[in-house]
Image (cartoon, rainbow, N blue to C red):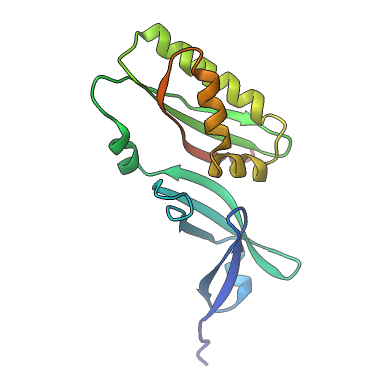
Length: 175
């Protein structure tokens, strides 16, 4: 007997869309991942997000666990005579730990001490802002760009920035 595949709607949290996913039955979808391009939602910022499918209250829901700005978009932002500041660290929240990679571009070339001050300032600001927030709220702040705006205002006191972004956000596995 041949079992036909059908489309099942999966509701993606944070962005509030229903996406059709093909499977033999809805139970096989649980634990699978859905990759979704959210460039249109973010008005041209070339981003990708990944969702893990879970079943809650009889409905299939996609739980976000990964957000990334594409390298091609980052390459477009880089100009001449600028300095790039990158970092990677883990923020532990009340229910999950998240790896964050901020990406900063200065208006002019700056000394190593200024880059270090920007890196340390960004890490301190992000850890302070996100230590008491849940996973959903962290991803919501990054996708809505409110975290990046506030970080840029905070870091402007150290050195004016051309770009202040969160390049990647990823839920760390529990060990």
